[in-house]
Image (cartoon, rainbow over all chains, first blue to last red; front, side, top):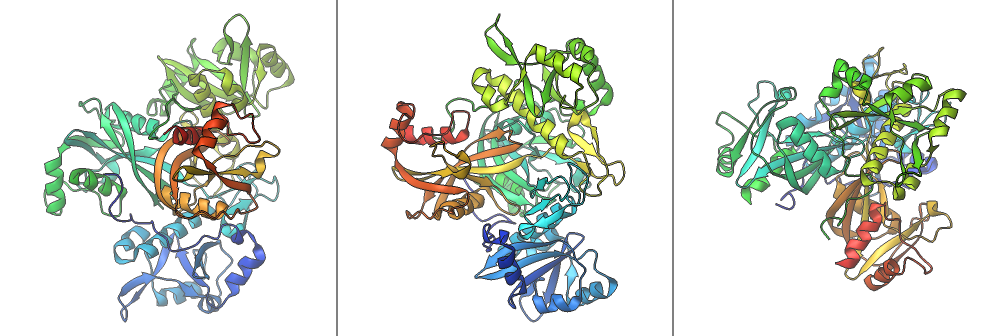
Length: 310
Length: 310
């Protein structure tokens, strides 16, 4: 129960981010012009997915520089993702592409939701999609300076934006979220979030961290707010980048000090204790019963399974 | 070596953040008008500190609502910090206060750096300063909408800003930072950062997390970028909110897989291996030698001490 048995979705990127070198505009420009450069287009935050029937199935739409050049795309945020054996990878926002370029892209593949595509791609590809989506989303939300309202400009391969008027610098945002399985001996607490809609899924509690608290304090606060349960010992399990839009899921186990559940009624619409045996059965039978568990891409599933198997 | 022996600075806030209730404007207004409400002024991100010689020394400048009313302050970001036994605490940015109000505030106390004040205050007071500073700083950086450039407005007790033009919502920002002690058996790796200036301090490596990586991946990337050391197993230790401006320090131990140091030369100007005995001596003699360790407010000190004492 100390770490996930396999890498989580959106982790294990094969790329070297080259944090120092990407700040050198000459180095970066040379890498971008190089004939082996690869560019992943995203439209409205959905990456291009190629369905190559001649190979093993879908793969992410990394286009070579010549193809991208021919498309005659408008200037748009472009982000350096990293190097794979010296070969530079970029992500490019093509949301504003004119009709002709958009049609040409759609002859190559489809723009698809990153999470829905995850089951069909390799772990390295999914990690790359996640990084690209989080970065492009941050650029869209940082077009203007929060301090003075002026338009901002991109620098350092897309890892910094700056304000030409007031000089403020803006860096990519990552929102830490605590996600925790509350346990009480052989029982664990799962809840239905209102955003699940009609899906009969029960999952772990979770919530955004706030300024001025530790991970452990955030876990105890969220569990009490959402389910009315007091918790004691908190143990870190694993973390997962979650590009919706740019969170870091920090997975923990929290030991309950009380049993009586009082749901908040806003975010959480139901919650109950599940016995370890019940969880094992749910996992084994593929959730054919009344309730289901979260999908395997989510760290919530791994928190639950590692506990149930321990 | 599994958790810090005492709470870290900026943690263990006594306040209930009342996350649900603070979104109710009527409830919040009543709490703000209540005769027992307390307001902490900050000027240029420095909190008001009162030096009450008649009591036990400095304390944070929580003013009652009547005092604040009399000061005739301009409208400025005000943030709900939480409840202590039903009593509401707020933080208020008074940077734009006119001369008369500023003078009146300076007759009550001094505006002082939050970190420099930490050694003189109680843990609960320091936690409250940290929360206030991080929140007020975020408001100053989010005056305008990053998506469209329009001025934003505050809501939910200061925990949300929204854009009246495009509808974008903005939430308080917390930047996750990995901070790690690299160990190799009885040795640990410490480094001098160029921002320490002439202070002869050696500390742990640290760096901001980037979109698309786990805590463990960020630890390994930063250690390799800054010191050229490959690391294997990473273990979480503890976390600490660090309001400069609004980071979350995620403290870890990382086991070295290599010995030869190659510093980056930009951020890190020196690095070397320290034997456990040497660290113990440095802590015991209060750093009277050539090199020092970080201050006790910093999680870096606790990472080092817990390892040295294990």
